[in-house]
Length: 211
Length: 211
Length: 211
Image 1: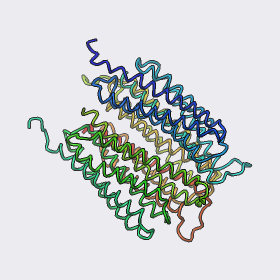
Image 2: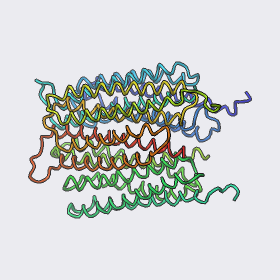
Image 3: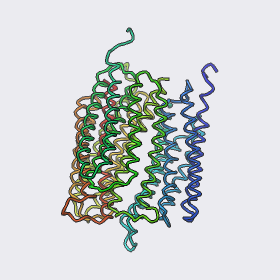
Image 4: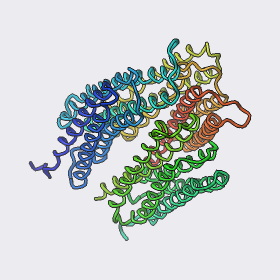
């Protein structure tokens, strides 16, 4: 007890867990969105937007707590960076959902579902890892797992972009405006995958310092 | 006096103020550029280029001072990051101005003026905040303000890109090469808005440490 | 000897040197790739891929050593950042090589060879600088040199993109899908140039702290 200067210290952990739960919920909705009929997309995208707003509130709570807490469980800057990178993941997901609706696309290429499926798995891994942050337990498996998911996302992304710009023999080329729209969405989803890796790298660098 | 090891310490503040003043001046020119006739653009873009060169000199002065100063007013790394992010803002603005000329575009979509107007306001806010860095006064309003301007810039950016790629019913679609050119400019301006947010986040993280 | 807590400490330097040598080797192959006939590209791209795999192993070795070393030659975070940014350079080079093959492009615009030539020089400068990291010798010339190469790369990149989107009078415009493909490659090479600058900036910030 002598070393516990403030009860606030441990309050960061539930907030990181909530941030990751929001991400997992948005990833589930994103999977529903890309599987839905075009007419049903707007409603699901609206739900992703609301989850992103909830995520912004959690980020804000973390920042306020950071301003009012004297002793933090790990470096202030790492708390800041972890909160920001979790926030980025949700931002990219919401941006992808918004663009799918905004660009009024018809059928999406199948590769987009694959991208979203990898995001869903990265979200689940992140959501399971956050509650272990307090005890710094089994985090290495988490970041190795997310790094390998990012490799997988990258492979899907490259193939998808290749097929889009240089359709395999026999496929008719899409019209160029459609190519541009799909390319934007595919790139935004890839940015979400990269952002998961940044979260994992931040956790890794926290763990390295604590070791 | 006993605690003042070197008179250099305070010399950083006027440099950050000058960096922000250059940004405000470039933002004003950018507003003139997007309002000008195509034939008058090159001359204004040249002025933005000169302001960017002046900005590079200020960045260089900050880095040299950082190398030769023993006691800095805040973390060396934060000085480095603040100087770099101010430099980035000006780089993106110059890049946008250069592209508008280089791509020989005719009339620009109205949304581009809106983007530039938000940049102008972010530049004014940054320019007013920098002189308050020394006393760490009223900085929270500044970063909240810039964050909300970035939200505004983001909304304009999304709408602009949506209208460009999926023109509202009734509008004739632009030819695809024009779409690509406008998209590049719109994205570069959005990067400038993001860079303002990075400046604000850096100031926030300095203030958090000092608190 | 009293101050040498562990013999591992110096083991980081050869790893950074190896990372930079891999980059130099990939840059040489990339130059061969853009000079080769389309039919000979896949084989060279495969070699770049293998070099990138070798680079990943070096990055991994650095991270493992970071986890198991008590006293590091400079800040843990800087070691982490230097390793990551060297890794990024090689990633972008491999991505560019992969895209040139994947998009099945015919003759490449001449400007792409210029971009790769600048990368080759940045790679050589980086490869020569890494062995000097241990003695912190002549590093300033290195980072000034790389920063000026990045300026050069930026100028080539802008001209190339300008010619692509707004062909000089008299040139026939490329078809838009080809424009998109070339644009992706040109942008990826520019990202490699930026990543070299990040490596140089990281070295600069290490040197600033050590000074």
